Image 1 (tube, rainbow, N blue to C red):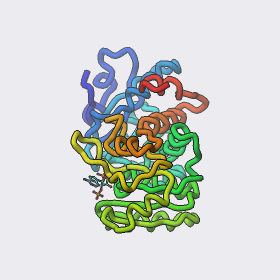
Image 2: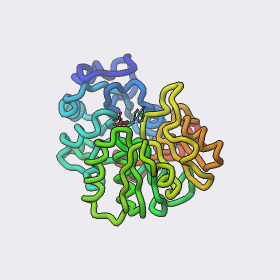
Image 3: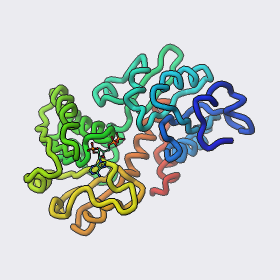
Image 4: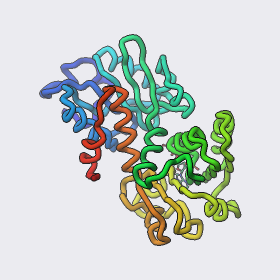
Length: 300
Ligand code: ATR
């Protein structure tokens, strides 16, 4: 049984389920997808809830998301998660997109209902819960500084902040031009949030950072061994809450610097868990897999 399935495997149950006691009914699709931690939290939740289903990884090439949905639907799948780079393409193939996902501009959770394919986004709401969980505070009360806001994760976090009505949002990106569309989207939401877009070499970077309460890394800087901290120590102060959406390594270069400054810090494990809980609840309403997923990921 392969660790990662492909679109070609989604042709028959024989191929998917050979030698398995449970049928594959949920999946995460991505390209690549072998790194996805979702099966590690979703399968224990399925098992603990007594649901006779397997959660698998399926590698789907860009441009093939619609075909993957059709095949999963034909095989009787309940739904799927969608990871990089398919979160935008997935939205196009959902006949019904939840308003929150529409605002966030991407879909990470899909449910194959009898009538329609429905799309949701649990990254944004998962982030709200992660901040509440790790820092015992409400995101809506924070002035937020997002480093690396040009990618998919940055967009979801930034828009969620505006949806929560934060007073101030500073978005920073290496490629400054990528912030234009994001800022337009943020303004189109019509929230009262003050939005400031900066590049990393802006002379006011440290001052703007000091004026915020919550600092978030949504860039991929910190994933690879030897990566630097996305922000220098002089941007941080002791009262900052510092959240890194990366969870591997557990202490990213940014969090190491923040720890030295004396900030409260947390990594992206809570986001991984909460987006997973919310996805599970879209498939199985009236369940509460939080404790099982926490335990599966080694959290209390
Ligand atoms: P995704 O869409 O999966 O979130 P992405 O498009 O690769 O991923 O975006 C990752 C983010 O990390 C972007 O904000 C990217 O900045 P650019 O838009 O300028 O590429 C940021 N990033 C990646 N490597 C970086 C680096 N070495 N320094 C600063 N930012 C970096």
